[in-house]
Length: 173
Image (cartoon, rainbow, N blue to C red; front, side, top):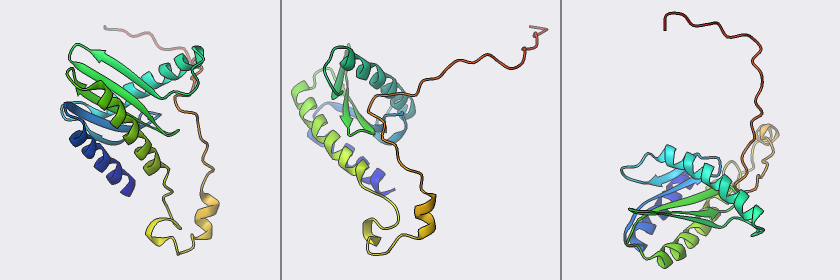
């Protein structure tokens, strides 16, 4: 819970540093919201769309031999949507008006992405934080599954399967 509060504080500080910023969202690369400051916008939908755009952007950087994904900028008639990598597991999306200083948007977005990456990478659980001097219970360590790091922008692939039963014809429609 402390990580989400720290990330939300970073998002609020961003609004003071970037004039004409209208919203910000931190999410996992899978599209789950970590923290948001996006009034008038559905944060879960924006996080899901960010994850989809991230997958395409990652594939595009690979296809163009541009190495790892760093950022994505989309300009609409009413403003900008900028997405920045925040470590291997998180992403930062900023919404800004059309008259925003794009250089300032990039500068602050990159800095905040790095800060959010540090906050998300902070270990949480027994034996960390304010109780770091206390040993973690042995049963907790045994039941913790190993964390697998997935490169940013990679999405799970679904394989279509045939249904095991035949659907019933619908009547009365």
